[in-house]
Picture 1: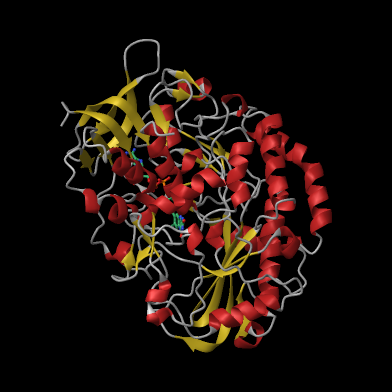
Picture 2: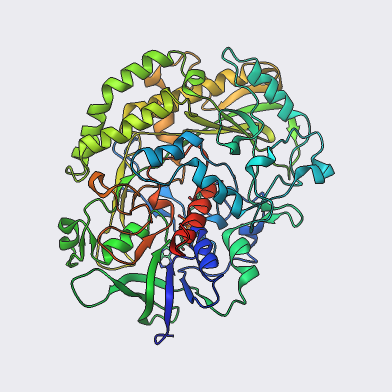
Length: 571
Ligand code: FDA
């Protein structure tokens, strides 16, 4: 193996990596190697079970990254999960297929990424997708599912749809009626994947309807193509760092790997090294390869190849909390109910205009706080620009400010939720020149108070939903946190122990190798090439410049599809 040379080496056989490897290897004269630290999970029931969310957590296919103690969020650390397997995090995620609000992708272009907007990304969402039409599945009749075919693909590799286990007992319609009865109603949204997410919807998932199993990146983009002789995958192989050609220029010529037998070797790439190791690994691989902040690299004896101090900065995630209520009716096991509501600021906050004005005044201070937390590696005036765009998205474009899920099980209704666009930004950096050492991950959850306010207000909103008919009559007492823990009229302070004590990472880390102009802190340019290198790209969730309101995978797949066309020279 060590003698081999490939045209392209893709580091990380996950969600994005397998898309790019698949598309590049469509060209018969192009050789592609995928390096994946995990193994195959094709027959792993913790992966395939469409109702098995969480079963893989803590097993050997979960990286289970640990954050530093979170000083603004009660002091404890958090586990951020990510898949360690062929298929990456798509093998352990919650299957939800929800994109972004169009204006959020347009913001990528507005901040300086020419060519990246909703209109140019939509064809790639569709190219990857194989929507399984629910109208062909009689078991879903009357379930309330709807979609707009104009926004979907039907012939792509990735199967998306609603499961045969979909609950079909009228709850979806009752919930819809409840949302209409709120003081500020939330309307039914026929298709939240159309670029307009606000409203209440029944969302699709990445699954194979016929087989009732998870559809992950390996099942969609690798296994049907595994006989391609120009596409190789090395499983259980850990990438340690990029190797460089001799000379001044930063041109990659390969990757140092530790093979499954424990031996370390270098595999050569004649064209490009493409990082797809995920938002909590790709920036660390860059640092291990000498691309990053010289002050950090020198601490660990790593020579700087490219001085790019913002590698690993701008880390953003969301915070997930959950409320639970008793249900007067018992729900059968083995059903899934995939209901989401996306309120806008005007729908979530009773005093949205005043809150927006207050937040606008705070943005310069927020930006200064983020910049000073990282020693001004990112510039406060640049961070302010990002924040102002985010403010405009919230208060002018009306993007959703929270995601509220609802699922019934047993005698319970549970409602997980999160503020969709927190402002807090942290960082990830290596802690050692040893490529297997854990990185220092500090998302700075709840550093900025708007993030906490949104998280509190979404909890109040859920209480209102459960106090509104007809759902109000179907639900019993609130069991988490419960009115004895957080009283009905609790102020923000009274919510703090519950929210900061019980939240978890929402597992949506992004922006650690941001696609942005270099002068405002970018790590990759609009062709996803790392600044200062001639042939290293990043194609995973690290590159997203702003958080999206949907879940990440659909956007990760679409970005990777577009990345492949860029690498092929088609764009
Ligand atoms: P991804 O993690 O998929 O791929 C990285 C790959 O690189 C992995 O296979 C990893 O093993 C490999 N790797 C890392 N370091 C390496 C090294 N040094 N050498 C070799 N290989 C290496 N999104 C969504 O849309 N709907 C949802 O329901 C959910 N739910 C959800 C639940 C949970 C628990 C998590 C953790 C995440 C989600 N997400 C989600 C998020 C979504 O799944 C995620 O953002 C994308 O799958 C990330 O894709 P990437 O390609 O960026 O990384």
